[in-house]
Image (cartoon, rainbow, N blue to C red; front, side, top):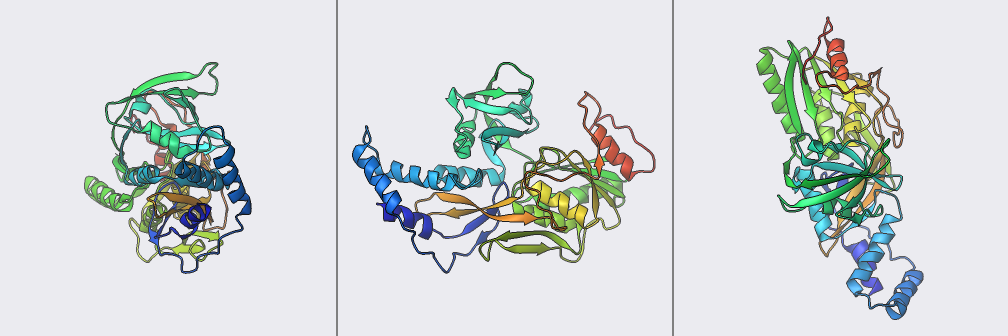
Length: 391
């Protein structure tokens, strides 16, 4: 039994998927499979549980629990995924699912809201970045199993779910009862802010984000009648997504230089991506907006443009996630998500738990009709300060 469990973890590999907070391209099966470790301790524990535990334990459930514990004990990002959780992860990468529109992460043993997507049930309920999720349908959050939390947030469209949050400054937990909806989160939105100045809002990095950026810039150029003079790339509240998508997006605006590098123990975990010749809007000035909820792949793009002297960063410090995960499918339909690399900006900085510090610090004071960060971005791109009445 134990040998089957270890073989599933070690040998059940068909391809890998590189993540920052999502899926990326597959890699080949490793040619050299490591030898099985000394398993006397694990074998002894499993045998004792099967023989002595107060209730009978299903063998498959026991093996899955052992797998979860083995991987989860490594760090807060590494996890064992059963077949449903793995399917959910792939759905998330496509950007289409049924749920409440929340992006969450684990930090310091708590499930924290990164963002509530615009026009989602969560957004309409005023759930905010930094809120701590403590219960779903009276089910206490398991801080060791983020995917169980994500799975419970999702469900059939038009079904209800009750959520409990802690918020800084509130004495009592906040209670919300939301109705799930089909979620097709747009990866890229665009708008002409002023003559010659456009904005791209990238909500997260999906499989087609780079293609959508190309289409959005073409539309902005048409709206402006001539190529843009300046572009604001809004990465505020962007939790990340597919690493390769962020790299491809950065490459659209760069014609040389390092985009991102990573270091890990294996050959596939040690890489460097460089920009290819040719770029979009080569004469336009760029401003990238970031805040405390700009994370992972969003930070990869922001750092690539700033460190290659292609853009300035404006806003507040970013989230700070500098780790890369690889999802390795197993024979039974599940997978393990394993931290395999630390990534570095083109300047060689490691930003985990530190984030990116903007070149121009502007704090956002939420009001009904102003966005001081966006106003500052447009002001930096135009000769005269422009007052924006809407985003």
